[in-house]
Length: 414
Ligand code: PLP
Image (cartoon, rainbow, N blue to C red; front, top):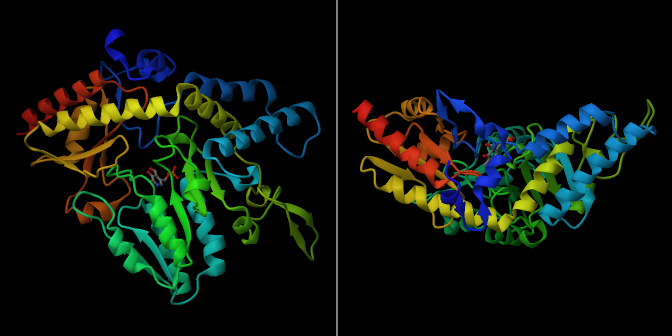
């Protein structure tokens, strides 16, 4: 890759790329072009090093040990909590709960706050662009409680119909759970407005930040969400770690999620008293190594600069959109005014799966299918899309390779 051509707004992409060892590999004899970042991002060396360092030098269980290794591991684990608190601008460190990921965070809220408060005839509102992980837990809860699931419709551009949303809100609405940025359309939803309206109706709000946290500035206090969930692996961090942010008074009032070690104060056969926040929701030995390495990912983002990353990704999104629009048989699905760097598209008479396979033959990784958002595909009457999603280390040259690859694909299949 030519260094001069890759220095784009605010960041030196070439220097950034050097920090991601996987980007040196080839796929099918071609340099890897990784455009599946919305599924999971690649990891910088410092994240990999943090994992190796923990297992090589201070592997120990946390919180309960008094020996040196346990103290070092506990300090590193808790340092990640402080880093997440700062990253999301949460008021208190005990409002940050470590989970396995976004999916577990949503399930935790559904099983605790949801089970405690949702009664027969109550209503839960989600949107038509939710990931399955923000649909199924609420469906299960509604089934159990005989509550009603209501859906905010999507416009042709792939935006939420806010007028329709406001009409769905009633005194029976207990929960509104919406995605901040859609993984299949790229749409950034006006969460502040959604939250304000929900609060006026007396509902609590869960924001699915799986896609937004890596691209946008997250300030849970300014947003005023009640719960916010995300996954480390989409933030240049390891898999198996996520965050549930919750307002302290809600987390304190909720029943426990899982029982076991760490989440208790005292156990007798007659009675158990539960631990304080955040440990009340962290039963058992957590994913210590990956939580520790998550801090290295957040450090990477802070050092690179969130604003720089955003500008770079916006530029890639704009460039890719312009280039893709020049392919006559291609249609972009999701043309919202505000988007994160995700482009979904379909091509006339070509199945998305075939696009994925033929691009892979050229070393280009895109995702194809319904992206765990089947209702979005139904809404647009398509079986699936091909999706290119960009990260801080992607370049315009890689987008050129994608466009070339698509021309080749179309030629082969038509
Ligand atoms: N929500 C959205 C918008 C997503 O994109 C994803 C993952 O792709 C999830 C939720 C689920 O995240 P995880 O599989 O990390 O729990």
